[in-house]
Image 1 (tube, protein in one colour):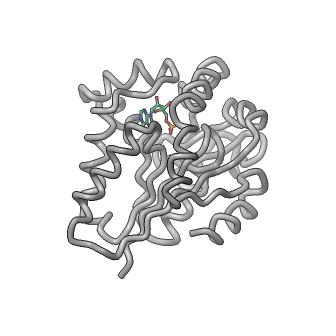
Image 2 (cartoon, helix red, strand yellow; image 1 turned 90 degrees about the horizontal axis):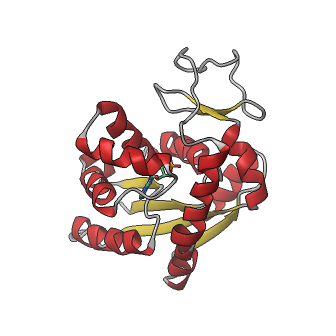
Length: 219
Ligand code: AMP
């Protein structure tokens, strides 16, 4: 059976989290999301979490050693053996090169691998508003939006019944720094993966179901 390795690339709030959550449930591949793994490390009070917190609050990339070790451990787990959905990693050329090395090692005995990078292309002017109106469930991670993707009961997760929260880095000030980081460090990956022939670009501007259909066409 072909192992499917799907990497998602795109600016903050481009909709990757919403689509990959659903994709993970439908395809039954784990959703490996570095942002959530780091937020969990912070909540657990680990040493890595403590270091990560100060970078996340400044909208900067967390040091590569921390992220790479978290990712490598996760991708080696048994539930990733048939495929995985990687969201939020790599975020720089250095991380992309590290991922290549990791996958060479992990897939050493597997010649049947389908590696794709799905790039969410979306105009930047839509994103800031999406970020400041985003809310999420602290228990299951489900993403909502107070304008466009409301829960059934205001402020409460449909699935868990717990109160929705706003991420600390989803303020206008930190979001602007995250965009700067994205354009400087992450956007060069579009060209990096295009040259390797792995890039699938989709128009990520549109209704959730419309973007879903566009994504399914390239997967
Ligand atoms: P996200 O949930 O993907 O928006 O990520 C939130 C924050 O976590 C980012 O702004 C970074 O500070 C940090 N982060 C997530 N993924 C990475 C990564 N691959 N490398 C470094 N920092 C990361």
